[in-house]
Image 1: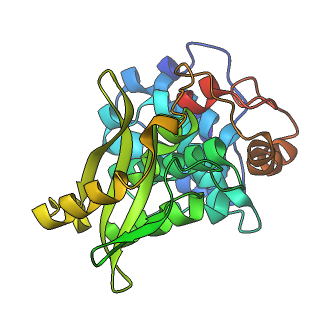
Image 2: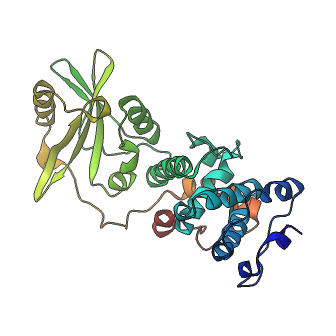
Image 3: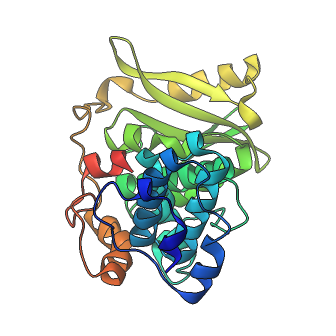
Length: 286
């Protein structure tokens, strides 16, 4: 019945399956499109959000589209809706990976930022899985007053990223393709810097590529010297740094299934954009 308030221009294609709960009917009356030209896109976004997530998300998308049509993009709707759906599913892995859950009072920019942060953590877990990285190339050790500790698991990387206020969680692809390794540098038990080891240009041996303090401030000359001394304590000629071709490193199947199974079961289908077999293409498209 709430469709009666829409202009004829809204129905340029067959009417999709739409939400029609009592609360939704009361809410949607406040978020109808003002322009007949925007009505078809508004109606389709609403239907897609309801199918991908739930009725509250559909009402939210309708509201945000009316407020700022140019900022509500269909390209990232799946990511937003998956994040919103898992926000209301506390007994799932997807929910456990959320730092900022969806709530109806969020505006579109804050929601997109939170959903993108969640997708970054999802990608890290899909790339690394539950087991630690077996080959960190180098050994933990001390040099001068600094201790070099491996960041060899999703939990270790997440803890370092939070403590050091940096973007370590975006390195899932690089780690899975054997292109880099991450280390935490500590002094007297305190985190003082994060170190990235990788190949540099055509050099086949490991190099100190990045060494940054909290908030990505530049590390001191003293710390760079200690890191270089620690690196050269190793026999670099025997380190295996063979890399996967980009896009060919396998994702962790167990994590992939554990992550998406609750969604598949709730929606009673496995959509082609979220397949049962781990897919880098699907992950990148989110």
